[in-house]
Length: 214
Image 1 (cartoon, rainbow, N blue to C red):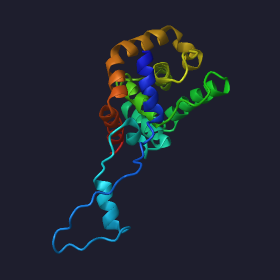
Image 2 (image 1 turned 60 degrees about the vertical axis):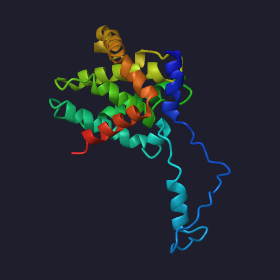
Image 3 (image 1 turned 90 degrees about the horizontal axis):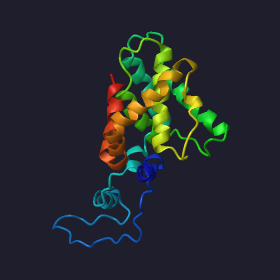
Image 4 (image 1 turned 135 degrees about the horizontal axis):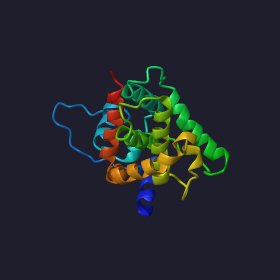
C-alpha cells in the first residue's frame, strides 16, 4: 500500500513534463524541388513538434482536463445511473464531495485539498463499480458515495490516515465499514492498475466523458 500511495501521488499531481533541453536540430537534405522553410516558419515548427511525440503519462492525460468539469460529469453520471431518484440534480453529488474536502482542510486533517482531476477520475472508477442503479433514496446514494470517497482518500490521499467521521452519515454507521471493506477487497486490482498504467487512467476518463455525452 505504501508503494502504491507513492505512485498514485504522481497520478494526483501529475508528473512535470520533461523539457527537451538543448534540442539539436538534425540536418536532412531537402528533396529536389522542395524549398527550404524559414527558420521560424509554421512548417519548420510543425516538423519539430511531430518528430518528438509526448509520452503518455498520468499528467499528460489530465493536463487539459479541468477538475470542475470532471466533477460535473460525475454528478451527471450519478443522475443517469440512479434513475429512481427523479429529483436528484447533477450539482448535488459534487457538493457532497467538495464539502468533505473543505471540512478536512479547515479542521487541519490535510494540508492541501485532495480533490483534483486525478482523484475525481479515481473516485468515478470506484463509484461506477459500486453505485447500484436501484438506489432508492438520496440519503442512500450519499452514504454510498461517501464510502467510495473515503476509500479514495485512504488509498491515494496525502495523509497517512483520515478521520472517518466526515464520511459517515448518522443513519449509516453500521454499514459504513462493511461497505468500505467490500470496496477495497473487490477493487484492489483496479485501483492498482489505474495507478500504474496511464492508458488505464486515460480510459477511465474517456469512459466518464462517454457516459455523459448523450
